[in-house]
Image (cartoon, rainbow, N blue to C red):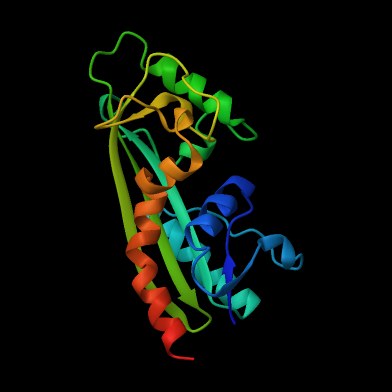
Amino acid sequence: MRSLLIATNNPDKFREISALLSDLPFHLFKMEDFPQLSAVEEDRATIEGNAAKKALETARAADLLCLADDTGLFIDALGGEPGVFAARWAGEGCTYRDNRLKALQQMSGVSDRAASFRTVVALAAPDGIIGCEEGRVQGIITTQERGQRGFGYDAVFEVSGTSLTYAEMSDSDKNTLSHRALAILAIRPLLERILSLR
């Protein structure tokens, strides 16, 4: 069985990604399986740059095939903020809820509530990047938190074409509609090709 390291220290992201890849015959490793690895500094200006950097540096350090992602929330009325800084928008050490409350506060009284969630997934081997794919979902920022499921901004992002936030969806429904699911779906042909080369 081929090995694939998921380059995230976020247990919620790992759970989502592993569910999306559960039908492929990879042995999935977590970052905690490699305690000698240090976290990659996400210092690129784009989510594409961060995903590629994490995938390649982690693949080289672990000497394994590696999948990494980076996600941004882009709110139209805020000029695309928080964008690439979505995970730490409310400051270093902030919680998911701190970020959600900042989004609601920044959008207070704003009528144009359009936003997009974007995830870029990068696949790398120790000798280089194999490919990158993006998943993008349009939606709106709600006026209050809705739903008890999910993580991150899920409770304040209503998905276009539904009346639901991600936090109001079941895991299985979210995994058919999410930006991360779309990115994983787009990169699956590369993973399947790697499996076929055994």
